[in-house]
Image (cartoon, rainbow, N blue to C red; front, side, top):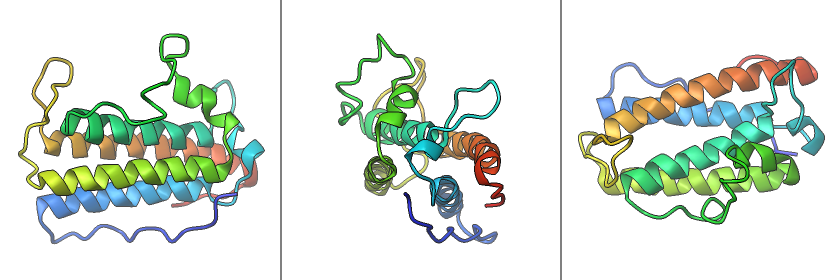
Length: 174
């Protein structure tokens, strides 16, 4: 099981743009991990209604999304493992499809490694106006856009995780 963690504090309201974006990103990262906390492998693979989404799949997906935007797009690096050798052609949703094959500790470890790479990438760039090394959908993309997109992505998936978690054990809230 993933142990309970402390929730990142509510982002401050009187801060710089960069610090505010990073605080919201950190807040949503911790919400997602909290949604997985205390669940076993079977619970992390539980679905709700007709959806195939699982909390474990969301954790692994966000690990991939972290590496995609910060490690690959922002810095221009190749994907690290396990993404580099994943069979995306056979399974376009590989991260979701393979999440049930991992223990809670393995999923959290992958997520934390991806977040650490992301944080290092952000620190190495610094300025939110910096344009990423790779284009996204044929367009130059700033660190600011990536941060806002990641906050949106986490917000959406934390909502999914909240509904799934409530259906497993009734737990709600951040």
